[in-house]
Image 1 (cartoon, rainbow, N blue to C red):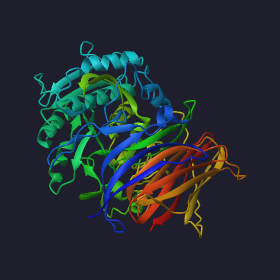
Image 2 (image 1 turned 60 degrees about the vertical axis):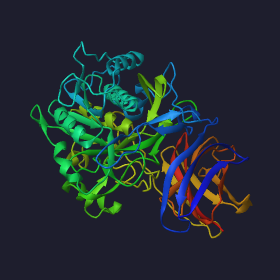
Image 3 (image 1 turned 135 degrees about the vertical axis):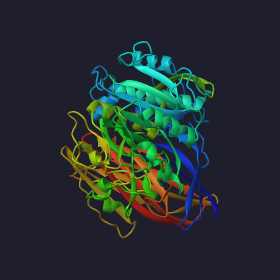
Image 4 (image 1 turned 30 degrees about the vertical axis):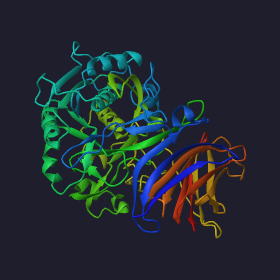
Length: 542
């Protein structure tokens, strides 16, 4: 197998560029490619940098062997990979998330008739105090042991807790704080498994489903042929009604993971929230690392397989994930307080991953007071924001897809965006232009690959993104995310970068590689007053 390092970096010119680099191990010119690790992320100023610049981030929990689970959480770090903690919140607040999705709000008392259980591994010794700090910071009602709102137990319901683990403690803080943020009136039950083995986590699941209406699981692992033996753990009833189970879809794109692929759970994927420089919400797009895919072993439920848009994802009767999505990109990450030191840091962290979107979906379900299962999700009960721009290895489509499922949940007076797309191909650069139409204006996006030129022992290629309105005038100040894939768009993500268009509506990136091969560059563009648009181009390095 040939080893190559690919980078996408800023180029002088029309706009500002933020960059990060991925190292990939690839068979250049062949079908197989594997992302091995995230090498470096560098952050520079941008009009959307407040929440949307490409932050440095790392997985909180390491990879695990079969039979064990890792948490699905990513934490923002400095350029050297050290977790960043501060004295005050640095990520999105509950108020911001509520405004984007129309959730009832921090003082609403929503969910007050229900209990949400969070199943995690190991002990978070500061869980109760951290939840109190979080609640006080954001004006949430107190949720404490003394007032009966918060309860922490081990996997059998006892109070002899397992040993602590700093990574899982950060996961626990995320879970309990954001379940409470979205459903301020619900009771919070934390069930701590003795370890991250599936055996112990399923024991914790058993206790949780006997004591809560909604059970959130922000963990998972690779699929295996015997996984269906665990499916029965995700069924049960509480207070005379079926229990709703939510599982994080993963933070590495395709393929599907377990237990997200269990037909008995709601698989929760991830999106990116895009904001203007003044903090106003622009759009929601698919997160490039959100989990999804067709299960290799599990069969789709009747509700999913009979859904009118199921056929377009080509799972051929297998379970398709995710079902739904919500904000999970650490670049639009949420604020979490954790006083248990993680790599020597404690305080306020900015985190992402489908570990964030999953407890939020559980909280929203408690707000609605509904049993969420496949029949409910694939019915006409939920007002979804359809995510049509983005790619996690599978493209976001109109309707159901493996990128964001059916989309995100719009609760209150929040409108969906209707988009239409047309495609044209240039004979010189194989440039594809997607036009996205919104009620406030039309934006045309195109990507053009320039001349390939030598760079040391490799090659460099300028990639120019143009955003124009219906009069062909440039749209300045638009946020641009450029993704370059090995061979074809939707394949292996080789490099990614963000930038901002100049007054002429253009920004240019430079793609550099030491290897010959085929590539596809895809740009996603957001601007105030316009729905998100995208364009792509194919090119080769000789």
